Structures are given as structure tokens and as C-alpha cells.
Amino acid sequence: MAAGQLPSFEPTDGVFITWLLYEIASPGMIFNSEILKRCWFLAGPTAVGKSAVSLALAEQIDAEIISMDSMAVYRCMDLGTAKPSFHERERIAHHVIDVVDPHEEFSVAEYVKLAQLAATAIVDRGRTPLFVGGTGLYLRSILRGVFEGPEADWQLRGELQQQLERHGRPWLHQQLAAMDDVTAQRLHINDTRRVIRAIEVYRLTGIPLSQQHDQSPVAINERSKAIFWLEPPRDWLHDRVNRRVDQMMADGLLEETRQLLAMTPEPARTARQALGYRELIAHLEGSMSIESAVDQIKTGTRQFAKRQHTWFRNLEECTSIPLTGHQSPDQLVEALVFAADK
Image (cartoon, rainbow, N blue to C red; front, side, top):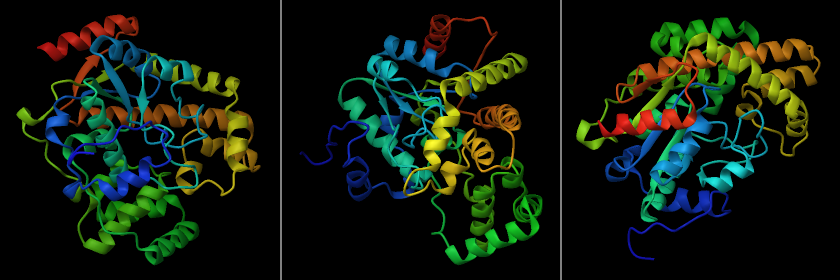
């Protein structure tokens, strides 16, 4: 293989992550600007209809899709993460899906490395990388780079976990707010894993995580010209969220969660805390009824969609594509291509 040439790969290659972590050098975790300018981005809140639009768009611009979803990286978590179906993956190649097992953790830095490898390989094939998903942190990290932070201090994390169990989630969230109010406002009170990490970073460095994450946008001439997010009407989206959760339950999300709990090794905290799974795990462990679990999934998903709106609105690189709730995927593709050509 020639110097600088990247190997071809399949998204589920067994050697994929191993080769990447040892061979890709990415000082500062900045995405290659020449590759970045060739990429398209389609973001938006959960249940907005990104999948249908992205498939039609990929066909229009001769693209392969790179997932931008922090939970779709986990194998065996299909229904709750709304992964593309087998038919959709046959129709358009998808990447950075099903790359780690539920007992493993997966960092933003690892995501950027995988995404850069996938995008480079797609460009080498003469096609267009199309990033699709709703994880705002992934999008910002691709566009602006990644702050990797200090290594984990497991003793400190253990102490913080004990304090969490002793004093509760509101108390822990208040501790973060006293150190880093910006990050505290961004993180939900139930997102204890990230709350603990933010406190850990502050305790180890003396600098709030929000300041360390405050990478500025790259110069306009170094950016992609096609960075879009779908902005839906609130009530329309809420109705779609409720119907999607009902469909996931009808499709077997409870049984998928039961199988997840039975896995060996058991799922790590990140997988267990994923929206939809967390509530059903609580039901299966006897702490809430199935009706309450489903209601909490719907409420949590609507709240999550609101936070996603905030991410995309605050990224100046993103161009909003307003939805009426009546456009077809083909009509939205036409609007996206027109916006990219302006």
C-alpha cells in the first residue's frame, strides 16, 4: 500500500478499529480539511425524518452515508437507535454503524477517527461522504476538532459516583453548575456519566469543560458548503416522536432490551443509559410499570429533541432547512441541493 493511502474496508470489518487506532495519526483531532470540503452534512432532531431524506439525497449526489449517531455505533441495539434497515443499507452504503459491543465504551475522539477513515475511503472511490444523524457533539467535533481531555481518573470517578449515590442527581448537577454553568445547562440532570466527566475535567485541570470545548469554527474557505439541519414545527415533531416510540414497542424494543440485559459481558453504563433502553431496563428490573416506562421514553425523547435543536442552532456552520410537515423527501432533497448551490 502506498504511503498515505488508506485501505478499503467494510463497516463491520474485524480489523477495522484495531488498524485505525494504531495507524491513524491525528494530532489535535482535526478533521482533514480537503476531505471535509467534499462532505455533505444532514443533521436534525430525532424522528424528524432524516433517514428517508438522506437516502434520496445520497442517490441524488452519489453519496455513501456516515452515521452521526452516538448510539448506532453499538451492536445489538437496533430498534431503540432506529438504525437503517438491511434493505436501506443495501440501497446505500452506511458506515460507522455496529462497530463496538454494548459492554465497550466509545469516545468522541474514536468516532472522529472512524469517520475520517470512512470519509477518506469514500472520496477515494470517487463518491461523496454524507454525514447523517442527530448527535450534535459528533457534528461539532467533525467541523471544529476534538478536545480529548485528561485521561480518566478512576479513583476520582469512584468518589463522585459514591457522592451521587449518597446525595442524588440534583446535588451532583448543582456541583457541576458551580464549576461550569455552561456545561451544566447543556447536560441533562439524568446524564450522570457526562456530569461526572465534566466535574472530573474541572477537578483535574482547573479549567471548565465548556472553555476547553470552545473551539472556534474553521475559516469559511476550509468548510463544507453543505452543512444542513432539518428544523421542524414543534407540535408536528412531538407527534412523530410519540408515534415512533409506539412503533418501536410494537416492533419488539422490550424484547431487544431483555436480550441486551442477558448479554455476557453485561452492557456498560453508556449502553444501559441510552434513551429507550434505560426506561425499559428499569421496568424489567421491577422499578416501574411498562406504561410508565413508555411514557418516560416519549417525554425523554421530546426533551432530547429540544436539546438537539439547541446544538444545531448554536453551530454557525449549520444552515437551517425549515420544515412545514408536508414536504416529501424528494422535495426536501431539491431544497438541500438548491441551498448547497447558492
